[in-house]
Length: 222
Image (cartoon, rainbow, N blue to C red; front, side):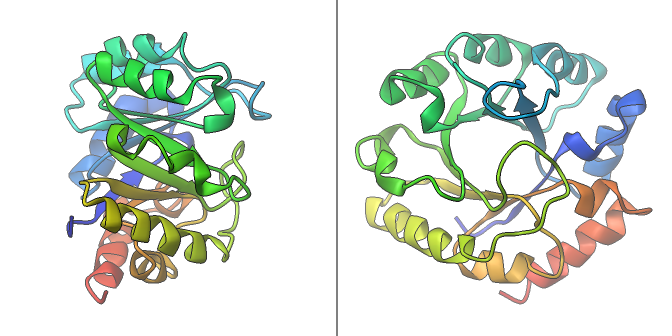
């Protein structure tokens, strides 16, 4: 999979004008809408639920919506997000008792499924579920807050996951979330990522298109 996807995180968007803001960032070159769903339980913050996802769909947003569940437990809310219009649903292995079942639940509800790994979460959770994965998301910050700095050791972890994906022969996206910006996106791509979540690096800038174009220019060098 050679195409790179840029997925702005709406955690950094303007909530008072969310539909317009998401529409604008997509018009300015973004590919995917990234939802950081936090429950003030698994992570120390509270963000938004399925109603916001449905509202964006009702507003007319057609782009893929990538829902990252930082919630525990996950099974109860998976069908709600699927019905609200999610395209991809990812969750943390620590947030479920039955990894295979939760992945299958996402598939049964018609969405692509993925696992998310915190900086210190070991990769052995991948051992028996590669056949159920469409996405693997590596957190390059500890989850719970926007605006954090990229953790450099994530690059080594990305290389290990890229190797696993290549050896599996499967069509699995390798996504990164946390501290991604134009200055480091090329190095992240070189380590094996092909989907990039960026929040403040896009939404906090005066011109979304300039920010996204800078990222694309850096990716073109890889």
